[in-house]
Image (cartoon, rainbow, N blue to C red; front, side, top):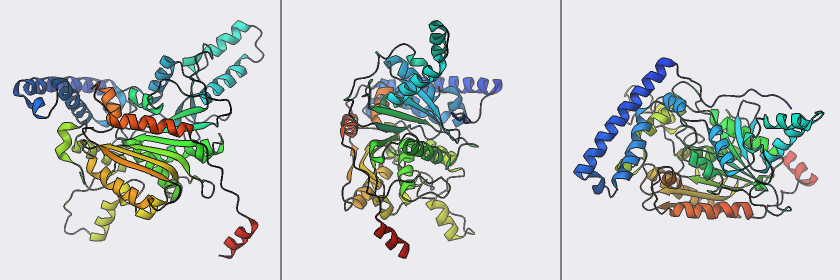
Length: 460
């Protein structure tokens, strides 16, 4: 097995002084949040927004901490994506492993692939051991699956042995600057604590963007390498692969689909057999990044959402690697250059994508959700309209794209994470879609081109 370099999830580690400043800032944010909550409770501000004091506190706290702490501070403060995935696996007795790819990318794996890797490495460790106890000790030290060193009796609900293998590839949200939340790992499994034994879930730990590191197109490069690994090394057919992404992860899933049809020149191409499409993709409140500051954002929804428009602008600047353009341009600036800068590339700024490129997205079943109470609602609704219009005449594909009343940004995740206890229709429909993805029959691979077709193509 070839050893690959392992890249950290974030680039900048805080020193002692950095941690002192972080703690001081967090204490200050907490103090001022408490003052706001008291004022809202006494003055009735929460009621005016139709919220309980608890919900007001939860939403205000999410906004204040996300905007009040820098990307580097948040990255140092929160646990890593792979750590959360390992903890979820341990608690739910799921097979777990980590894979490290050629460009330093790490992905956490839940399901039978993880179990197979653990079994393989355990067998290698135990081979030639003189004492069973020594082999057992070596197995227990195996880092491929510390969550499951015990037995195979804890494997998830069994599927038919004849069921085809399936892979779910998950890109978590967080503005490209924060690691996954605990509920993102639950989302990756369709909000189930078990997986059929023919399903493996791959959670990409992409590089987190900051003011100085991991800027576009780093995350798309990592997503492309992971998908190529599944297609070539793991030999999954495209029709056995489903993408799931929320917020920034939804942006990344969309960018990857576009890259498959129209490769970004900065990213290694990933080749699908002619006419092949992925099984499905769920884009949950996908972040429609724009070059222009706050373009299309619904500021009136800020009090009902977990996001500030100003925070989105700051994260977009980190991700794009340059300042987000102001609405007013300098008079001495060339108009063509200004338009090009505002437009961005279709892979980083999806709203610039032409309709034909949307029609070309190589995926059978596309499922898009957003909350009508979220700051991003305007841009996502605009994208959904263009998407449905472009894919309507495409034969053999399904597209479901809709907004949900009284729901905020990625409501199915935030509702659970903040323990709001609200009804979430988008979650119910996502779970039904996810289950359908795992049960749908695989499409047969496209036939290879005939010699006549090859000659004809060469002639053209």
